[in-house]
Image (cartoon, rainbow, N blue to C red):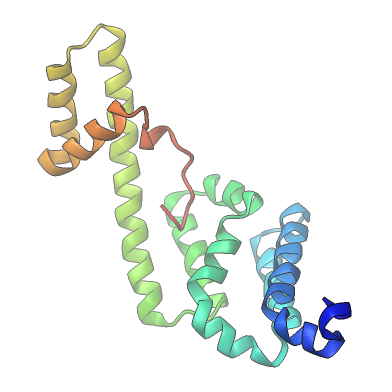
Length: 180
């Protein structure tokens, strides 16, 4: 890059890529580091400030969801969140979002969505347990359809049925707190 364009022009052309590489490298280090979520969040915010410099506020405003998601997706963050009670997890997610600059209205919308997702996953886990018990006894397609209807209602039951017929079982997937 430097050879073809010169250092100044190359730095300008690839500024976004270089910035994203710095943030990705910092996220890997944060994920592998010890410490609790508050320390990880503090390290992440410092890494964002270092990588983004004067553009931190503008970049954070434009990409707040993406930056928050990248932090929440870290395996070490997910591990801590998964070991918390639902109330503690919701409070922690609120603190993370607040720490990354989300406003009160956005945080309230996320809280509501998190509660809805928690309920959906709880229903899904109950369904999978009932489904496993039913299929171990040689359930018919109509038995499975009734079970899906019982847990999900007509619209969602059809979606779940189509997913299962294609080999996808959403409630056997890993839960990503704050995301699904």
